[in-house]
Amino acid sequence: MSLAVSLAAGGASLAAAAALTGLVRGLLRRHGVVDRPNERSSHQGDVPRGGGIAVVGVLLAAWLALWLWGASTGCGALFWVALAGALGLAAVSWLDDMRGGLPAWHRLAVHIAAVGAGMLALPGDALVFQGLLPPLADHALAALAWLWFVNLFNFMDGIDGISGVEGASLGLGAFLLALLGAVPAGLGPPGLALAGVSLGFLLWNWHPAKIFLGDVGSVPLGYLAGWLMLALAASGAWQAALLLPAYYLADATLTLLRRLLQRRRIWQAHREHFYQRVVAAGWSHGRAAALIAANNLLLVALAVASQNGIAATAAALAAGAILVAALLWYLRAAARAPCGTSAHASS
Image 1 (cartoon, helix red, strand yellow):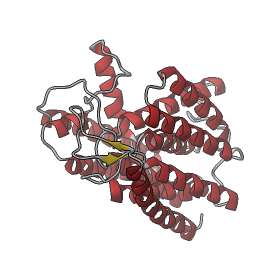
Image 2 (tube, rainbow, N blue to C red):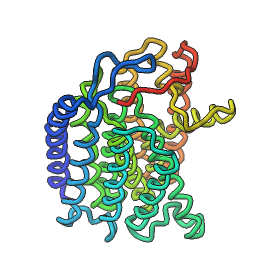
Image 3 (cartoon, rainbow, N blue to C red):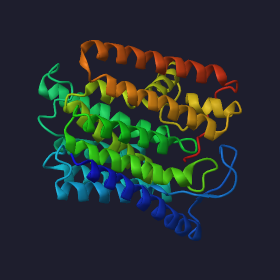
Image 4 (tube, rainbow, N blue to C red):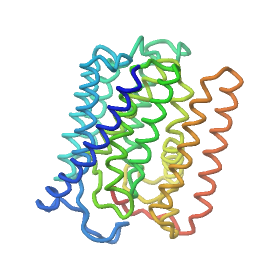
């Protein structure tokens, strides 16, 4: 992998995402596509919703250009199928953003179709679990994991800055693993492009947010980031693929399990994630997002360390588990407000 190509992809994606987000923000405001504060909101004033149009548009263009140029050699020959899946998810999510009320099974059907098609674009033989399962079971479990990741990425988009922080962390981790030779070099440029668009959007979405991502951004962004994590796992770096998104996986999964045990509707919008409870207790969005960013940087370091031998792998996995558990305990302990059932504001 050419370091210059990766840096160029990241820098160009950052600049393009920042510029296009500003342009899209003006258009959305002009056409009245805004989130207005209500009793369920965590923001003040009318904020344009739909910044994902810029973020996903730039990322798809960057990944397609890298693939056509041959700079994404770690991507499968059918990589364009995954990109088409992301485009389809963006279209359906934008429709839902605009009209609202699309039946959940309609959205789920599109998610399943996109994930099924995207599985064809994974590199190599796509054995995500490295031969521990028969190929059919491997593919089925990987598809389910990807489907869950797409939805949890959307669920977690509830405060200013959080999605930009997560996307930048996942992309940076993939780039570093490729740079160090732990995964195919061709996965590095797409990783840095993901980090670039996330940081470009973060310039506008850091608290107080000037624009929100919307489902048109969070759903396809989760899809593309999920593909990248599965590509890392299929290339042998399964420990890193688990460590990099560990905070998101833990927060969303534990929250879902808690709601299941309480016999509450898991598909209903709420404000019960750990980071949301901290904000409800008085933390600013910026403080909560900064803490998650610090946690993610440690997870990136542990993901890189996990590729250096059996002892290092065991130590990194143990340290990652302890780190995430301690952070979630701290976030929960810091939140003094009772859990609510109101919807979270999309950021």
